[in-house]
View 1 (cartoon, rainbow, N blue to C red):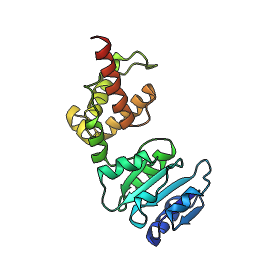
View 2: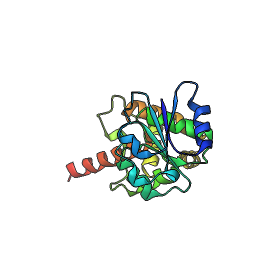
View 3: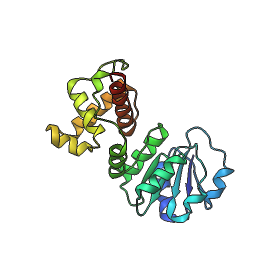
View 4: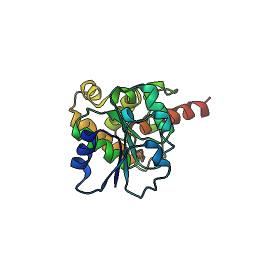
Amino acid sequence: MVIVCSVDTKLIKLCAELFGRKNDIKQLIDVKMLKKHASAPGDLLVIDIEHCREQDIPVLWTPSVVIATILEYAQAMRLLQKGVRGYGNRHMHRDNFLQAAGAVRSGQVWLPPSIITRMITSIPGTLATANNDSAFEEPLSKREDEVAQLVTQGLSNKEIAEKIFVSVRTVKAHLTSIFAKTGYRDRLELAVNMKQRETSLIASNM
């Protein structure tokens, strides 16, 4: 089921078009009702922040995407603390909406590139070197290691592609392989863990 917290008929219609073929669509007018709503495995929650107060959003366990007209870094951080895993512009492309829904349903975090970049660059630590970690079941290739380090610096896929002179599709393929080898689910988790691991390595060698 897809639960949509909004009074925006256009958003309800969009969700029905995107998800209605495989899911029932349920509308909640008041976000406070989420505290009493029992979710089931596979449910998706879409919250329209323009039609509800942020402070009324409870701590969430259901895979959730919040949409807003103006995206704010501070708001994204507050929502993540409440269990929200997706945050995007209400006018985002349909494909991005589907991508966000798929990501949060699989346990990943889905945020705009600008917010992801700011989060990554704000993480304390030094530049990571993936191949220094023997905990991975399979070591990263030299190119994968390079891509992982650039992600840790906060670069987008397009910026990485331009820096190492490959296509964006190739960067995505490298990331898919990196996630498979490391067990990390998204670029944010990759960056956080790589920086933490490198910091630990430095500390242990001091």
